[in-house]
Image (cartoon, rainbow, N blue to C red; front, side):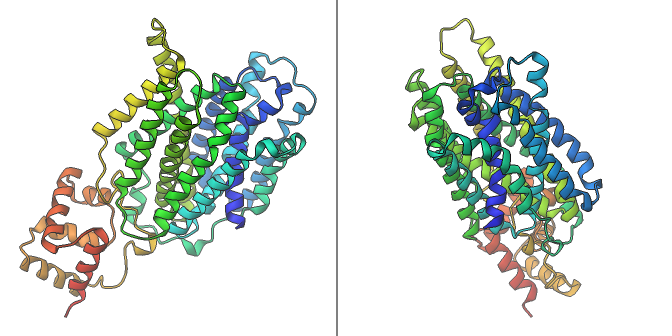
Length: 464
């Protein structure tokens, strides 16, 4: 339970402040120039922080981790203390520097908790993340019932509570990193594009709401926030069930919710409505949690020390994608300035175009996402049955089933738990060629999915 609460706190703090502007709507005396400007500057500082951490985090001795987190919590809290009185007018310099300390502090705290999540069994970690998102979004839903002074105290105190609950991930929960695991830490372009498209749409959604902050916007955002948590929890339960997973269904479900939300957003006119925004929140929760889980999985595969670097790299990619979405949103407004369409319509049309492009050009396999099959770490590279005699026996049985030499190599890698990306790299073939080999292997082995294929191959390997 403490892990769920601790993980929820960094996300809740960011949602309360710069990402969704609830704090500023309750404390207008903070006098920040605009929600949209605050979001952009916060994201810029966040990006720089994650780039720095991706390069330097692994070289910092662990004895310094907790002192750094206490300093981060102080940076996240101290910026709000003047809001108790009045910040006064914001100059351009103050506008740019005000989010600096909160952004760097929240980046360090979020990274520490994602690293902690890497120390949990993958499926349990996915469910933990779902509960954390649900808890954070539920607090936002009841924000109107919380006294104003308690909200302010929460924004100041939440980072310190998160540090108190944090602990480094235990070493024995990480598998020994293999050559393929280390290689998986370098994100392929297909994965980068998928993440960039999704979080660009997410940024466009934020820009729509933050450029028109009023009582209706804040109310709609607050009422639909729980659906973000519901989407994340659905993904966590999906993984935790350990059932045969058709990974495309997750993306298609998120894509359907986002597409319907953007279409309805255009249909309802200039006012924001609960239904379209709720569908968008649901889609963001589903796909956002899925992406977070994917990066956590990649971090686990690289071992305890490198997991911290992978977490920082993934957050840098996500933040860069958000900034890309903001740039695309501004370009769309510029290109369509001759039209009389409302900003909400222009942004929704841009989001729909990005969804269509992703659907046409970024296809996923039934059992993989961006080349990764999301095996739990304990099933990767199993030691049982990996003797030369067992592998020779399996090769002989596969030859009896008319397997080609290349198909035999692929089958052996399947028993070793390698991802599609690793297999393609090892064999120096394209992803399409590998998919063809896997399709032929499934047909010859009469297997229904990757796990069933692995079980049948292991049976042949160990059969005397």
